[in-house]
Length: 158
Image 1 (cartoon, rainbow, N blue to C red):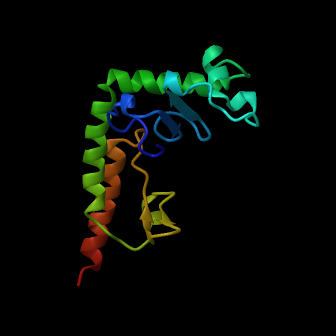
Image 2: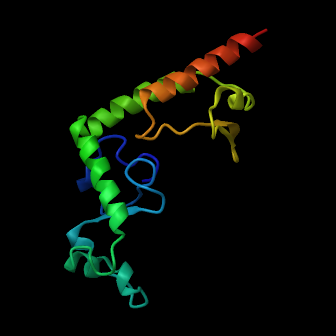
Image 3: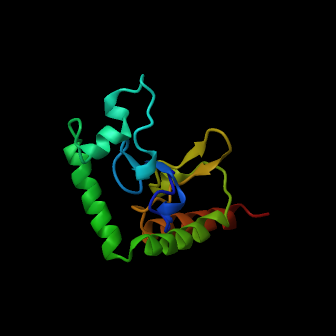
């Protein structure tokens, strides 16, 4: 999981391990959340450093090495916010609203500078524009982008 982390309800009991890049939806860049079933703990290869051995982490309440305190604090605030607005179910509804506003349009990637919409970059592998709809992006932000895209379409339609 990565860009979809905490964007919808997930039954974690269906997974042995969830290794999630939590950036954008739950915390700052570089933060990773790992959820491991108890019955999978203790099977690391001998070569595995202890800091990456999930049984060691679980046995020390994830405090085996120095934790990233500011990241933990930020994630705590984000999780509290998500909980207060209705949890992962609310995030899924907001994600659906935001994506419906955006994905029905397709425009070339120029003019966003005029509308102070940065960064609105081309996606390096598929082209088009790349707009993030992560949890922190508000409905108002997406409405602004959708209005820009609709205006662009109207101005350049044949």
